[in-house]
Length: 345
Ligand code: CP3
Image (cartoon, rainbow, N blue to C red; front, side):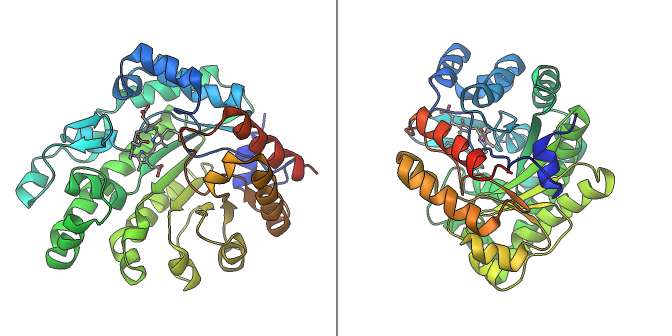
């Protein structure tokens, strides 16, 4: 049976434009909060394949999205490389010993050895393959090397990125060595997710906007493209989605290149601009401003506007970044129904 989401990634004819939401499994769903409470905390939930599979499926049943995204986190990668990850209430993710030197980098696990430690992720994918309806795709994912490196170097989320930017401009060699090591782990990680059963993979570069446009290729995009091209060469039937957040200037200057299938458009980039610059080469995913979900009227207005631009061709509906925890579930359901309604052929 064909999967509407995979078909859309390859620009094949579909009965309507499929839709999913970044961060669709999460705190806005009371059912998620229940499972997380049972698990004890977020990381325990990521480490428990049965529970992780259960929350992965929740948005399909409750919200009606057309694809499932594996429940995990991008930061399990540096955790398994040997950096100790904690989630501190009110502060988000924390690495107590951020990476400062080549010596510390050399002490981290790399390559396949690090990827092999993520067995709980592959187990979750295998369970999901048994549990998901045949027509629903399962999206695997990774963080882009740059976004992962920001947490490894800063030790936590940051507004200024001053520690990693100091490294970028005063010791670029060390930053490149970090990015190289992470890239090599991610290639194995993506391959193992695909071998376990992921139908599609997405690379999240959530903090792309921290890099000046003229340096974005050197410090992030080229590593993402290397990962994408590694996947496309070995697994051409697996669609690859790139999501660099906040890169309108990079798009506008015509700097996007690489062998992948879908470009995720963030909410700060006008869909018409993305279509003009990228629409003939890549299927576009996105891009409603996620806080429009607070209002059903503003949601419908935006879904219709996006549909008017994309006309159901080479398009996947999504938000332009993740759904926030205080969005009413019924508004998320409304968004999904509206995307399916306006694009029905
Ligand atoms: O539904 C899905 O999209 C799948 C699961 C998923 C999570 N994190 C679950 C999660 C995915 C794809 C991610 C990716 C992720 N994690 C990114 C890239 C995507 C993006 O949103 O830009 C980033 C930057 C992270 C790092 C991360 N993880 C942060 C900054 C936080 C804390 C943020 C917050 O809202 O507290 C997390 C925790 C996290 N990851 C939660 C979930 C559901 C919240 C944990 C909880 O309290 O239950």
